Length: 284
Image (tube, rainbow, N blue to C red; front, side, top):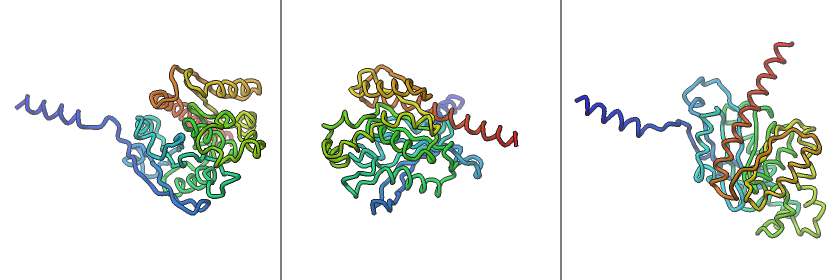
């Protein structure tokens, strides 16, 4: 009998998940593009089974070129981070080759407005979020890394922290990417726009707008040089940021490891912001 009880106890332990986060798919309408898109939302266990009045910070995580809203959960263990750091994770659909911009040549492609305004508004209206910039962060991989930094720069009142993983931080180095001209326009005819969208062109704004910043890229990644140049420019300008290069290339093995450090960084910025708010109230 004791052996049988032991057997069932072991079986229950094996079958019980170590992480109790809940993942769900929501459909978010876009007035800017007159259509709706799916998004993956991961809620920490504490959201579902804890204090029903408690609110949570949010980390938006963008996919790369050719991907969709399922990429992160299908190819990494990102869901565990919701429980570990008590955050809501949101992975919106950014289209296959949108670059997360409001295209100057294709009025049907307004993914910066969608992700940076419409998705944020939807999530804040339907989940118990802390609806302030100090409790919002945005990051992404490759095309999504560019998109995260661009959206944060263009919406400094919405995001207090931003990151990039293996980011295509300078679209001028990606002119041969399929579909990029459809949203950016011809590089010769729209050179001013291409130049203005490069993250390095707006690097000082991260400091001016007090956006906590973390960037990393694999040393074997073809995009590492443009990331190094951005890092050097930020150092030159005296803009605070975290920068890391780790072994690896443009692969899910690299990205699924790197996102752990990025969410850890964001959790730290959320805690710091909360402390500063408490100290400010105490001073008053």
